[in-house]
Amino acid sequence: MARELVRQGGRSARIQKEVHAATHALLARLDRSAITVPMIAEQAGVTPSTIYRRWGDLGSLLADVASETLRPVSDPDDTGSTAGDIEAFVLQYAEEMSSKVGRNLLRDVLSEAEDTAAAKCCRYTYDHLDTIAARASARGEAAVQQDLIIDRVIAPICYHILFGDREITADYCRDLLAALPATHRRPA
Picture 1 (tube, one colour):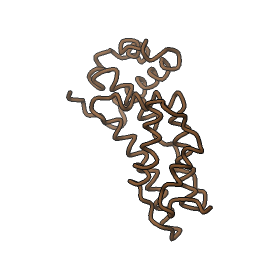
Picture 2 (cartoon, helix red, strand yellow):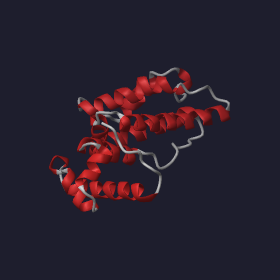
Picture 3 (cartoon, helix red, strand yellow):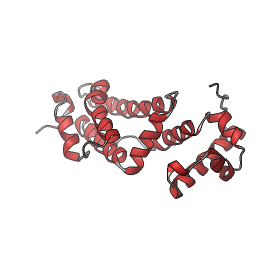
Picture 4 (cartoon, one colour):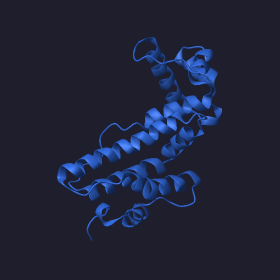
């Protein structure tokens, strides 16, 4: 489905802000299965056609809201070592994503047909790992292999969060980290 081009600022930004705020307010009060585009439109002060034209459908709107909610507000913690930075990032990621809110956000992001929101969220994770990699380089430590961390740590965490087949504990995350090459682990 063709989407309108979104300009930065102006009326388009105000509409997005109002629609996102209305969606957040409704999600805070109601189960997501009870929420409709007309409800969001009424609360945001726009017509349903504005929402359909901009987002296409409710799933895409929820995915967009979720991806904006998942946008990091700060850099990953700087613990003084690359291994410590990676561990802190992974533990925080797992804690946030395995919460009820995090699970719902992940599901919303992944339910979008066009994967735009999923690509944004993937980029957020890589951006954090890029920050950790830049710190490693500045410290003269071994290079961070972002793809390895995504494949061997983040992906299994997301799988288990989405399918709910195990509890994502700090110990489980540390076990995943322990299986990484030594340059990515804390010294024993």
